[in-house]
Image (cartoon, rainbow, N blue to C red; front, top):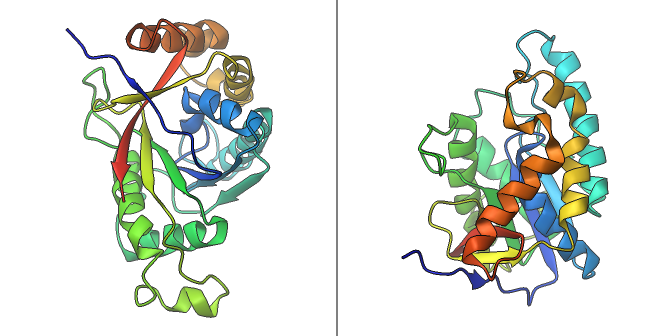
Length: 243
């Protein structure tokens, strides 16, 4: 029998959510973000790309502009006002020092207690293959969490006005197949639905039979399914990786 999730600790005040693309955080994690901002916690978003390669029938620059705007509106729906774009190329985000440096800069900028990202393992929970962008961003984020606190790694960041920050306690990986903790998103789910719906232009480009055709039904079903391991309440699961 599958073990129940443990409650995710919430004895922190600042979080930075990092993802490869606009909309990555809106397929569930944003409902948890809405809960946290309602508690008075500070949450910021860093998107590694603007999602320009996400719509095959649309010019990448136009796609990037549209999806950036949708992401800002989605963040606002869950109480997030600080949204940063790193402008790495969508679809070809590479693991390496430039990405680690940019993420370390973002961590030093926002000085979070907790980092939040999405599943970056080779496969989704369904078994389908995950994208290289997600995989590379997740691994780089784990490395950048310690890079940010080391004064001798990327020392040029201090010259830019970003001194070391060694205060990251953990990385919370939303939807990880190794999730052992969870957040009750009962109070945040409506805002999470509004956040996903903010990506209307991108969602309209998906095939007609995609499960996001009804945003409210999609997220409600997803959170309730996760809740079967967490007292039956709407839930977002996380793997907690210590730093």
